[in-house]
Length: 135
View 1: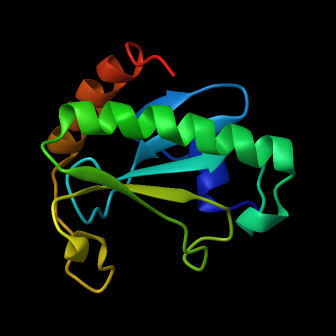
View 2: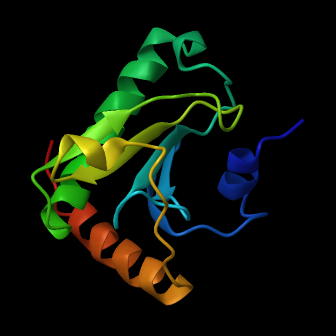
């Protein structure tokens, strides 16, 4: 069965896209822990991140790095936290979360309730920054 993330990549389900290339896709989490919380996924549906072929996994990390630097350049934060949980959706994904404290990555805390317009505005700012980031 196709995951919700595969449906996002195919355009069946809308997303606030940050960036994509032939292999990877980045979009805002619609239930974020912080403004700018972004998910980065491989386009090939693989449930578990450690089942991704080495070359593809390396590419995913490099792509996530560029996305993370774009988020960091736009969102007021000390760092971008990186986490992979892998239990919520059966499609490997990396969370990039703007951080000011260690507790900003606590998934037990209430999620932000942002409007579609707020998400769209944030995505646009990060997209604009993404194209200027050199890795």
